Length: 395
Image (cartoon, rainbow, N blue to C red):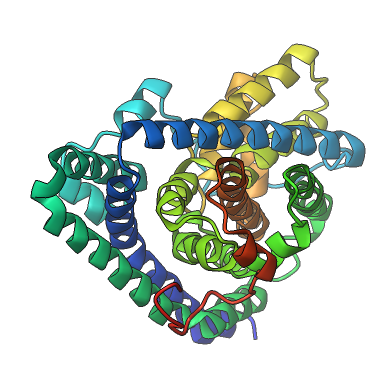
């Protein structure tokens, strides 16, 4: 159908993604306030947060290694010449580590809510939750109200997720009908390499970690399927967060209060696809395309920059380019190489984001298993739906 496909089908997908983004910020706000207030004190939050960050970093490092190995084996940049750079490409500004840290603290929490700055929303909501704990019984009614607001947003999430089949159809139909193969063919090897690297990471790395924790990987992938599907078609960790949170709690049995803290945090800083595999694979691709040999020191820089930089990658479409800019700059590789891939970025972003979101669901499951916050009976049932119908108080 060509351009007509985008005209007729894309609005369905756009409305769906907009609906999910609409509920994401209030869902995080009330869920984090309720979660922190329910975890009873700073020590519990700090201990869980430390474990969560440790697994975020460990899985990111493994993802970088997978990206490097696949790039070296498949050599997607060899034998290519004369590729045209995207005419609208401009070098993206990379924020400094200090700026990333400063941006966590909102100068105006209401502006952070309006702009969808998830890290700032988590910071503010966490402070409110700690304040409710500190004030004790004087804020009992407010804590109850936060819990009720969180439950209300979960119900709103159910309503929105009812439109998933229609939204998925609109996104896929519009993309396939309007994209065409002429943009894909010259870089087919790179597309294949990225999809293979992400698939290997999801199946073998994540699967091995689950086995090491005594959990059946097939149960995990069945329970996480809804979140992975939305991530693939929306190309946004932020848009996928409500269904990922629902999948982790309803399908996989992670404690609701801990999940309300870990999943939104992961949607902001846990980027195995965009922040680890993609920059690593792109670095190898650029070096091969320009005929450069990477030194051991450069490989180490790629690993370090990818792991640390992934914590600052925002969970929205397109910002993986910022991560690639950071890594290529750190490894002293030509930034012009990024422009070669911009034309196919939407295709790449689908698999990258699915990898991101799968990791964002995996880590809470691992930490919950380690800390006794995993309902094993729910995990073993591993429903593939996200409980759109209310089935009782325990749902």
